[in-house]
Image (cartoon, rainbow, N blue to C red; front, side, top):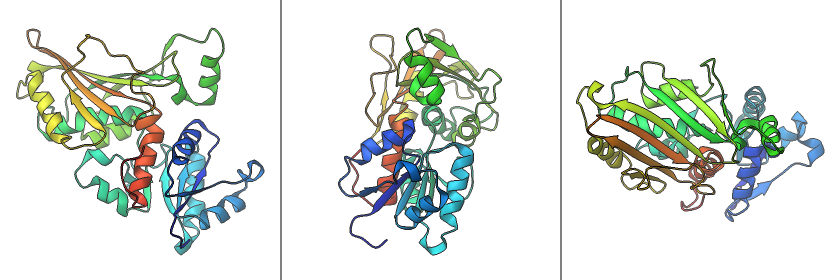
Length: 312
């Protein structure tokens, strides 16, 4: 694998996330992007041979298949490539590094040094981005009864959902995961620093991509009785100097629409507060296929391969 130009293989490049990552990596001249013929993409032997010939493999497969892909790579021993897993299979696995570079000052270094990185989910990126700084600052207790409401474009829901929405007359809006067992909840709870499982209410709108994640707070129920400015300052201080995360006062038009950051790797955070009512709503705004998937993967890949920053 010795080469001046690191080689990258996307295992599962035909899926929504795989295609998004491939499109972004095609604009990164520092790497050599390798691919298997369509007839060999499900052949374990061919995939393992390709893994052995590459520096890094991006895994874009369902969870069980992602675990199998990781096992194929690890079986190569000293020839094993670095792995970047876009599935939920390893999100809270202690042997994998969580790929949210902005969540801690030393996280970029951990990602850069790791041979196994798990890419965050789109919803968790917004929820953790909002909550972790406030929990660490002592403004939101770990056991506070958190409710997270979120809406995503339908591109994050897999092939059947995409086909349903692409058809004329697709559903305008859907609440889902009403059994309250969404697979993203464990990583939100763990990496946000919560000790009490949050209630998570995801939904899908009839638009292809974009995302809003919101968390309501009763300010007088928080131990320090903060105001909106206190919450905003804690977020601003936490992300000061960040390339991709910004903190805003709230929407000047009193509304936010989910598609405004599409095509970017940005994560915009807002504190919308009504001081007379002592209510606040935290809002994270991102592209579910950008900072919520493909953009984040490319950001992590650049760290893992020691490439210059600045591309997404």
